[in-house]
Structures are given as structure tokens and as C-alpha cells.
Image (cartoon, rainbow, N blue to C red):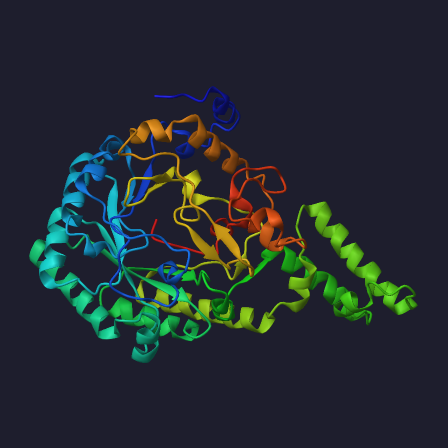
Length: 446
């Protein structure tokens, strides 16, 4: 097993950073298939730069077994529908025998294939957690988003799980729903949570839409300006409004050769705001801040507040995303010791770098190329995890010393829009500056 002696310095300086630097992963996200039986409008599989299709086989799954005795969680899904893999129960049974007693196994599903018999075989195999996709409670909305399915299919999936719980004596099974928020369906979130809780859901995961097509940007209910940037902007705008300074006229007068005293006051106010932000280490994208759709942010916040009230009333564990990006970023995938294995055995560090796609998450085209550190069928999974390349990647991510591409006045730049990413403006070889997972905008079963 290859060691990376240079990486030991971070562990010595940051002894509290445990999971990412242990000699084994603590969480594995394993793609059982990249095939799917639906054509959901927001899925990366509808993206022109998407991935090829295939199923995880037993040989590849067996290559993961050296890592299983130390896992806290095994999540058996990727871009496909896990129930399409007929070996799913075999994977669960084998993993359950090798994982520690506190470790859990789960996956997300559209529920279309969740018959009474399939639900029972999954519970008998040892499944601990299942999360059903639900993007609306109105049948028209549901069908328009999850093309090929209907709300009644989800109803039957809940009924199958409820029956299997009783027959198998598995009342400990956790059932949840995942809701992808868009402008067209966001108001259905609170009633959808109530609907799911009434049918046995105990948790709900809400994520914003990841736009893989440019037209999807019009459906985004989040904003890429950060919470702290917005707070600074609103503070300074309030000051300006109090004394009659129109800060929003800044770009109209900025390049005027001769400015009036009032116009110069506008420029001075914005310059003072930029200095304030710089002193706090906060990036300001002035064009985004001035053009931000504050009414939509207000709608999103109000719906999330109502959703939280519903969750408290019905006893649902609700996990909401941020309404705007967090200024203080953190990568839960790396920090919690996660690794991702695609159906063909390739090992990746996170959702962001799992599959090739074209992303518009930051408001502009960003080609994403997967980052693989090896194939578990060709090299041992622990050998790949402890390789100098993979360990150094995790070490660099833990420093969080990378740019905030979505909040940069110079974005999009050639560095992040290249088909083959090489380095960012901080000379990092990890494309983390353009990732919105670390800002809390996107969520998943983890």
C-alpha cells in the first residue's frame, strides 16, 4: 500500500480532522446502475454530455469488501435507478455481514419497481434506509417532472414498504422522500411533506435543482450570491438609501469621465462596501448582487419556513438546503471520509466529480470531467484510498483554500470553462471553486 508522507503534516497540524485521513473510507457511495426507467426533466442523464449505461457486477462489488468493516454508511445509488439491478439484494446481504453494527445501508429510488415482493426481499436482505423521489403532490406537477411516472406509483411504493415492514418485522426501516425544489413546484413542498408523513415517511431531503441545461436556470429557486455578501450589500444599501444615494446606478455612471458630486458619492459608497467585504475576506459579485431576484428569495424562504412548521407538526426529520450559498464552505463528502464508486469500478471523491456533464449551476456553462483515482477491480480499494494522489486531493480540499467562482466578478473565466480542467486561479488542481455542494445548495442521501 502506497504511503504519502507529505500528507502527514496536515494530520499532525489538524488532529481533529479524522475521517478524511483515516486509512479507510468511512462512507461509500456505490452506483449499482447508471440505467433508469424514467426520463426526469432535471436529471443529468438528459444532458448531452452524460454518462454511458451499465450495471455493477458482483466481481466489482467484491472488490469493495476490504473497506466494508469500517463503513458508517453504504449508499447504493448513482445516476440510475438501483432497483433495476437484480443483484441489489445480494449487495445488501453481503455488506450487512461485513459492516459494523452501527453502519447503515440505503439508497434513493423512484419507487416504480417497488412491488410488495421486492420490498420484502430488500428488508430481508438488511436494508436500513430508503428515500423515494417526490417532486410534487399535485398529480399534474408530479407527472410533468418525473416523466413516465405518476403520484399513484409513489402511493403504491409506500404501501409496499408498509406491508413489508409488518411481514418482515422490520419496523426499524427508515423511509424518506427527496424533493427537488424548482420555481414551478416549490409551493407544493409543504403539502408534499404532509402527504409523505401520512404514508410513513420519517425524514425528507430537499435539494435545489442542479441545472444541467441552460433553460433550467429559469427554474432555480436559489441564488449564487452568498449569505454574507448579501448581508454586507443590504447593510450598505440601507445606509445609502437613508441619505439618498442610489447605489444601483453604480454601473451606469462608473465609467463616466466627468461625474457629478452625487455620482461620485455613489462610486465612493460602493468602493467603501468593497473595502468592507475585502477586510472580511468576502467575495462580492456586484453585478449579481445588484440584479438579484430578492422577491424569489423571499418566496423560497417563506416556503422553507412553512415546510419546517409542517415537519415539526408531523414529526418529520427535514433537511433543507440553503436559500443562498454559504460564504463559509465545507465539503461533507471529503470531511466525512466519503468515496464514490461508479458502476464500472472507478473510484471518485464526490458527487461533483463523479460523472461527466455540462453544468450551469453557477449561471454559466461549466464542463465537468470526472476525477478518478483508479479502478477497484484493478487495484485494491484501500490502496487507491491511501494513494498519494487521492490523499493529497483530500488534504487540499480540507484547507478550503480555493476561489469562489460563482461569486467572482471575473467569472466565467477560461480556467473553469475549459473542457479539460487543469488548475484554478489559485493554482489548485481540484475544481472545488466552482462546486455548489460545498455551499449547501445541493443535498442528497448521505
